[in-house]
Length: 460
Ligand SMILES: NC(=O)c1ccc[n+]([C@@H]2O[C@H](COP(=O)([O-])OP(=O)(O)OC[C@H]3O[C@@H](n4cnc5c(N)ncnc54)[C@H](O)[C@@H]3O)[C@@H](O)[C@H]2O)c1
Image (cartoon, protein in one colour):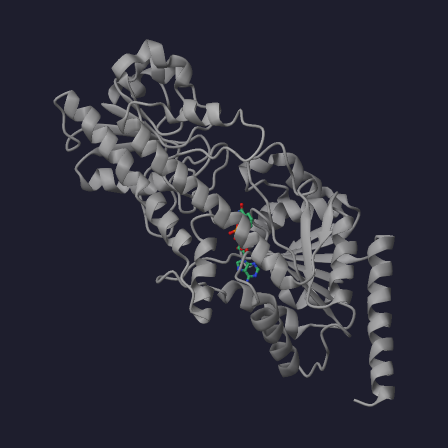
């Protein structure tokens, strides 16, 4: 490149980024959000509340129809959010990806699951990148939010955009004509103390101009935006956060098994340890890991680590401990039934909570499915109750074909045992305490009734 070419290129970059920055700051920028699920929908709402025009994209026509009609499809978000979006002339949702060119900034929030052999499945991310590439134009900012392994944005996402743009005859350069960054989503559905706009947002661009533009964009919607040195730092930080949780949950699950054997109450132990004002933070045991993140994301690093010939022993061990928890819950139930001269075979068992965590309807990787299927294999007759899930739709490895059983005095007393897998706050635990024959509690949901219940309550 000659000195004149370099100067020209710099001028182009400055022009493209200044004009986009002005549009963001003046509120005239249009934000496109690809993937309107647990992450994309609240993000769309936050950007909309930040005063920008939002164009949502999804491959799922039913979500687009719901949004147009103001129907809420994610119960934990409440109906105001969708009603507000559908009533606004600054929001529209579509399956027409040829409209991506209308957006000044595009935020990608599509799934990043695992394949059959625990390998990363980037197909959703790469499909989005190709769709973006087809209509790429000067002055666009593209941010990947989906959780993934380090270097995905630079080595997989950007090349897929460029290839599709090239096929469409568009010769554009990243960092000069358009801008690319990574910003991990830290959404925690169901947590009322934080929302998309109050959770600090990490932003790392493929270059400085991309970082600066992404920071300006998120500042419209998020209270605290934290620029980091590179996209790779932001990608790895997200994995560190999730691996930290997976490992600590595994450790506390292992402690639970040991202490329960010693007749020591793990929940009291955690409460006691939590009084230390430094060097400790509480994690809680449960029936196993669930959700789109903690059981899955660590394996993205495991896969990538093979490239540099390094093992990820903590991740593998945590995975081993956490996936053994459903079997432990069944062992506790089996022993409790045995003490009553009963077998699992032929027993009627009600599982409370199909979602993987309280107060949401998200069933992805939920251990409740594993528990139900295993109990059925052992010959139990199993029902479930979940106020968020009237029917059990198929998930990755399970198809229960069950509907939620109403929680009444008659149903509760009609089961030989009740397993509390997820402690939704709306469950009537007093009803369980008063009428259940046996409760196996994986969540410490029955603490206040402990003394009344005696050996009808079994911690697991
Ligand atoms: N759910 C969480 O709590 C959470 C938290 C932090 C990070 N994340 C990460 O965010 C990403 C998205 O997760 P989610 O929970 O929102 O998933 P989700 O399944 O709830 O939503 C994804 C949406 O993307 C749509 N989609 C799939 N392929 C598409 C395509 N090619 N184009 C347009 N739309 C497409 C789906 O129809 C769905 O509506 C994942 O990488 C996940 O790991 C999720």
